[in-house]
Amino acid sequence: MVKYIFVTGGVLSSVGKGILTSSIGKMLQVRGLKPTVIKIDPYVNVDAGTMNPYMHGEVYVTDDGGETDLDLGWYERFLDLSLTRENNVTTGLVYKTIIEKERRGDFLGRCVQIVPHVTNEIKHRIRNVAKTSNADVVLTEVGGTVGDIEGLPFLEAIRQMRLEEGFENTLYVHVALVPILDVTNEMKTKPLQHSVNELRRIGIQPDIIVARSPKMIDSETLRKIALFGTIPENAVFCSYNVETVYQVPLILDKQGMGDFICKRFGYNCNVQDFQEWQQFLTALLKPEHEVNIALIGKYAGLTDSYVSMNEALRHSGAACKTRVCITYLEAEKLERNPECIKDLANFDGIFVPYGFGPRGTEGKMAAIKFARENDIPFLGICYGFQLAVIEFARNVCGLKDANSMEINPDSPHPVIALMPEQRDVKDKGATMRLGAHKVILEPGTMAYSLYKCREIYERHRHRYEVNLDYLQILKEKGLCFSGRSADGRRMETLELPKNYFFFASQFHGEFKSRPSKPSPEYYGFVSACLSRKLGKPKPIFD
Ligand code: GLN
Image 1 (tube, protein in one colour):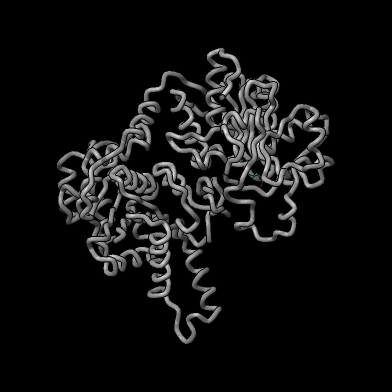
Image 2 (tube, helix red, strand yellow):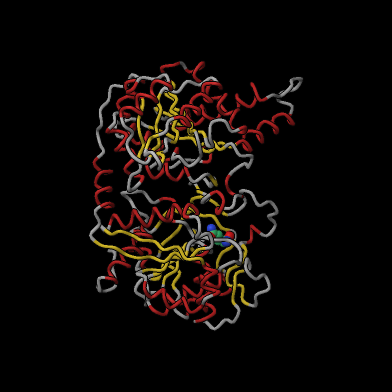
């Protein structure tokens, strides 16, 4: 019988539900169980693809091309899973399905209602993931905060699931903020009590309460939470501030949460393997070196815009026992203050991430030029790759005003052009080139030595690509396209063989980076930053 765990949050958003859900999954996984995770997002967008990363954080991309909430990234990183678009359920998606059915006449004669039609569709989607994933435990994180209007149908659906799946197969976990008041240095449980009451009003009595607080709750606070939450004291846990989110599964497991859940589900299993996780953590928390990386971005004010990239850099850092310090620089500021470009020499590496639209692109290209000319390790991802091509076309090939058609559709040298299949696309949602595609790597190149194989699958999210009309001149002047699509017509990776480390990819390696298995391109970059800092010769990854 598959088991269902539902995670809700109270008091305010960003209490770390995503990390908590991932951590519960991890505690089950190290006990030999197979978890999968669903994220419910109560907004009306059909998927996250059309949302501005500056408001909502990065758009995560799954192998099957789903544009999802960034929490799926946390689930994948913590659990080393490859999830699908089905693992993200939004209000928009649920309603779209129901309205399509209604128009087809599937409900003929009936009035279509939130209960039961919307709630049935939600339950169907959760059960469908259970079926297709073959998981032992399906964790469902309900986004937003208990009490939000838009979350109600989802809470009603998960309430019904206990009736239908049985007490022994369902578990409700509620996490809420327990702040400490500066004035009295006291832990305050009242907001948490209110959010538990709100949950009960909807008909859900939590089985586990997790207090999210700056430090470990004292026994008095714990007793209070248990009493007002009507749960035993051993069902109250605390997720306190730690240095890195990767510690959360360990601190909760130490408090007995993993054993508690297993006992509740009647599983007879012990922790088998936290070792790999521990080793990663030790490398992460006790580094021997440090590198400083400048990230030149358009959404630099919100680090969540680049969360998978940050994490891929950290995973790579752990693999080289190196702390990776990232400085987020607004690309536009470099445009306004060109004299600041030279300060980039203080960094061990320059990183240009994904992006859209013209804003900040000149600043990013100035940074790329600086990296290329001063031989500072450089990694460019997606837009970073495209801008590296433009910079090279302009400043090395002498193609004046070369540009991407996305930035200047009238450029005399559109070295980056719209993909042919994109030309007639009108809708913005889910129409980019998305998801995992095969990339063929050229033996003898940096790309090949990093990935150590000829064929790789990496995830994509773009509309534009290298214009084949300019391939010849770019190649002649020394730009090597070391990775291409299976048909050879799409440029996927570039490198400058003469430089210490100058590498970029049209794909996004960060989406497949895992704590103990860093993305090869990020690993190459971070280790190059380190070896250059240590004065070592250009790294060879064979
Ligand atoms: N804006 C570029 C494109 O659509 C790059 C996209 C990205 O960086 N993800 O092709």
